[in-house]
Image (cartoon, rainbow, N blue to C red; front, side, top):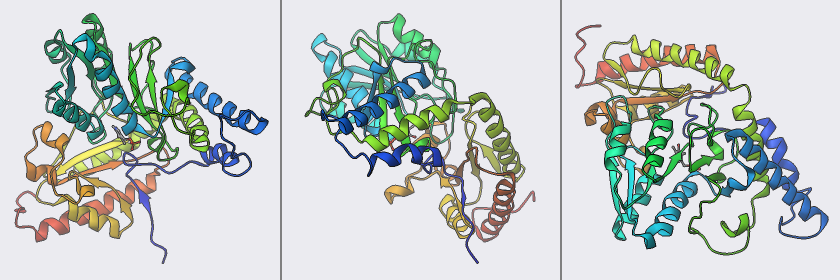
Length: 391
Ligand SMILES: *Cc1c(COP(=O)(O)O)cnc(C)c1O
């Protein structure tokens, strides 16, 4: 029998959609030209890049010249933070404000800057995973260069009060960056209206390729380069452009924001079925906020089980999900996000994240819930951590 595959880990990565692949294919073989060349096929490759730039810009309501292609979300985060920090250092600005539960692309960049003499404030989040805008106001100092707060959290899906935070930054004359990798295609983004100065996007979270991303940089803002080399991306980001990936990302952004309200409603409804189904099991609790939450994200702590064992058993029945441990690094450190919202390490270890997409079917959700109930029961029966009192 062919093993079923039910993919519920879209927050980790997504597959390339047919439409995105179609957009990419011509630039692998038919036209493989370097976009910096003067002949016709080179100019066609360049035109493909500029079409993609226009599409990305339109999808976040920016201008095309504010869009810079990078190697992904991590590079965009690194560049935003280091680019501002290094640029503003001569003005005596050496302080960055961020939160404790950012993606490591932000946290580790700030930590690296601290080792070089910069200072960073890591704001706490509340039990639902919200940054308090008033904490941002209090943290900003005369020497603050940048505030970087993620739009939506990749583990627990909490959507931050971005506009309020941005308004506070600007009232204090400080730049505002947001990692919107998880938010794109799930919330309405309007960089102008929301007063966002810098914003990071990653292709592979929205059905484009891995290794492509974008940093939006508000017009007039000059950042230090992260990389030096050729004149690509107006001299700000060198390297021969990855034309297929860029073309695909343009299409992916266009698709991500089309019919957005319908998509949000549809995915939220399916997601709620998952939440209600799991939360009906005794000894479970929701992580993150129920309302201000990414549509596809379910993150639940389950008492008396180990997330790693749960994932292995789910994998045996073809379900791909994530747990509350940084198992990718081979360590069993509980997630910094779950600890930040106040979970005890045991409960953080017993957490599961299911991130669905529009493609997830009702039948798949039934399959996920049936298997989860069975596996949780099985693991608890074997567990010394669990006393079956109320079942
Ligand atoms: C995936 C992710 C990133 C990293 O993006 P890459 O393209 O994989 O480098 C950064 N921030 C968040 C919130 C993410 O989910």
